[in-house]
View (cartoon, rainbow, N blue to C red):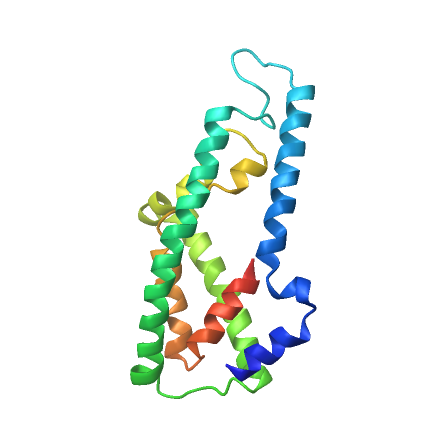
Length: 180
């Protein structure tokens, strides 16, 4: 973990916790977009244009995002324990976190596994059932970006391959945090 701390210490203070600084800007953009949509909106029959805000849809998206944060936190906490067990007791070898290639394997591996999961989620109906909430809004705006799935089990199972191949679990999560 010393390498992760060293990496974090190199970053300027504002970049050490980017989410804390990103949320206010995201909310500001959401409010600006909402105001612009209200000002520019022209109704198309019974519903507003696709970039507009419908209050119930926006609140559904916001609540789905908040619940997703909670469920993802719990499931990722459980996953971290499971990954640690896989890494310690099952992995045939342990890649050194101090080597560049371990970081490359972790970052590219997380990205590739996310792509595989997301692609499967659009092709396999059972996985689509857990993923479709992300695509369920009729509107395309910043509030819809918060509409996330509550069940991350597909991601969790696929990412388990990395600790099995010797990538330290903390590095898997660090790579995932910079993935999107």
